[in-house]
Length: 148
Figure 1 (cartoon, helix red, strand yellow):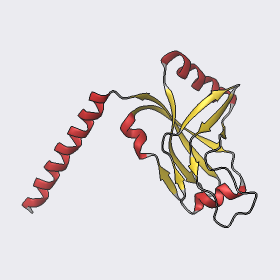
Figure 2 (tube, helix red, strand yellow; figure 1 turned 180 degrees about the horizontal axis):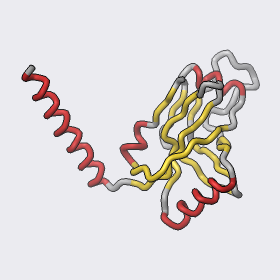
Figure 3 (cartoon, helix red, strand yellow; figure 1 turned 90 degrees about the vertical axis):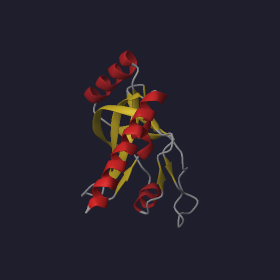
């Protein structure tokens, strides 16, 4: 199972909850994903008219594609049931949270699934604290490994 992670999202957001969604793709898009030509930079999801849409997910054009090749940053529909969409809509509207793609993967059946996270943005000082803690932990690990 191939998995592609949005590394920048964990740096910029606190994840509150997570759910799995299907994604509507064209034939050339799935071929590009299997080649690993995907970029999450600045991607997000929006709820519009009771449907969830994924914006700014860059899937490079398929090299062997013809005139029917896809647009790299087109808006893609996510497949969720109405109950999940209503719950997400409530959290986004009332609590000011964001919908951020956390990872994208191909499951055992060959279908592309996206892990969508309900997230709250981090402040600058929160990001600094996390980086400082990581540096301290890394330094402690180096010292522990140097003893042996």
